[in-house]
Length: 232
Ligand SMILES: [Zn+2]
Image 1: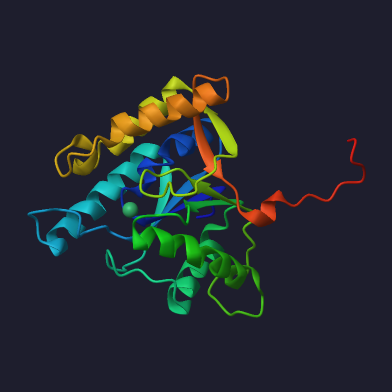
Image 2: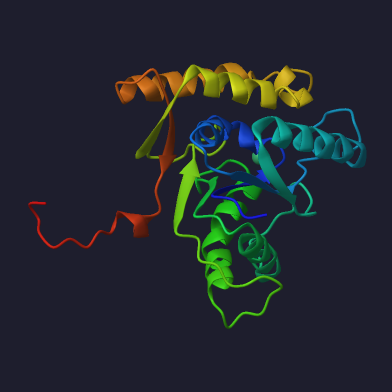
């Protein structure tokens, strides 16, 4: 079940932020995967968390299918995700199974502690996945590249540096997939997610002299380049 790109979200539904990019990657022929660390089950004002978790799992599966993505889900609880070694090793096990060239996750400047934890745990999970000395069911795998998605909850200090051009069909594929969630149909929260992200990718597109773009922040180590000449 190897994929080219694995998007790691703290909650089922966080793929709303990078789903357009995943749709574009899929259109370009890449295989894509989603890893959810918790169901995000505490976000409903009236439904008990256990019941909402069941609903979110069904919605997440339908969304992944609509995007054409493989899906992995860990069973941590919403609001209780921590960047512990145990979680890092479980994420590393998924990285070894999914073998992505690129991992996408949250930017660190988040108002949600689970998003910050997802950001924090990835470097060590990547290290554990890549190092042969750590035992595991699947062979070691080094994730070559990491990017941070632009999420409305994670925008403190977010600097967009990589812009992926989107086509209208990517936006349509994303919206069809996101509507698998009651949350994005406006049935759970008054926040207008679909309008927000459509406006965001339009603004990023205009910044990049395109119609629509999905923007990403870049880890510091990926700024480093070794060149033969400063004039190349
Ligand atoms: Zn979230």
